[in-house]
Image: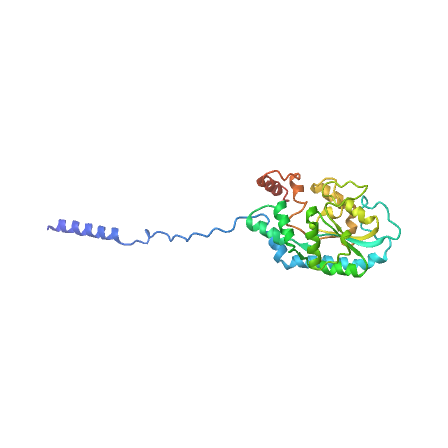
Length: 294
Ligand SMILES: [Mg+2]
C-alpha cells in the first residue's frame, strides 16, 4: 500500500469510527414520562371543595347563627320588631306569637355531598338525582344551625322551615330534620312547595305566600336563608333586579335577615344568563365569563 493509499484508508477508518461514536450533539433529549391525565375540569370544584373543607365556611355559618341568637333576645323584647318584607306583612295580628322563618337547604342542612357527587360525575343537577339524595336523609346540620334552632325553641319562638323541595319529599325532609335534632313543633311548621295558602296565589317557587301565612298568626322576628328569595321575591331575577329588591331592607341585614353564603348554586347564577337553562353549558359559561368585572 502506497503512503497515499494508507493515509486515505486511515482517514476513512477514522471517519467510520466517528460515525459510530456517541456524540453529545446527537444524544436524543430525554423523553418526559407521560403526564397522567388529571380529573376533567369542573366549574363547581372550587366552590364545593370550599364549602366542604374551608374552616372559613364553617366560621361564617357560626358567626351568622351566633349573631342571630343574640339578636333573638332583643327582638323578643321589642314589640315592633318584625322581619317580614312589606309585601308579605298584611297586618300584625293581636297577640301574635313569636316565630322565625328558616330556609332548609344550605341554611340548616348541608347538601354539599350531593354537589360533590355532581362534580365527581361531571353531571348537572336534576330532579331525579336530587330526590335520590334527599331520600337518603343524610344531610347534616350546618355549623351553628342546630344551636340556633334549639335556642329559639327554648325561648318559646316557633321555628318555621320554609323549603322549595318538591312536595313528594316532604316526609323524608321532615325525617332528616328530626333525625338531625332540629326542633319540629308539629308538622305545620314545615312549609314545603305544595303548601296551599288561601287568598294568596303562589308564583312558581316564590316563597312570599308562605311567609305571609306565617305572618297571619306570628310576629316574625327573623329570617335566615342562603338565597335572596328566602327573604323577598325580586320582580326580575337579574343582577340589578336582585339588588333593587333588597335595597329597602339593607338595614335589616344582620339584624332581622341573616344571609348565608352559597357559592355552589342559587338564583344568582341563572340571573347571569337570562334564567334560560335550556342554553347549552358553553353559552351559560360564556355569559358568566362576560359578567366578570375586570
Ligand atoms: Mg337554601
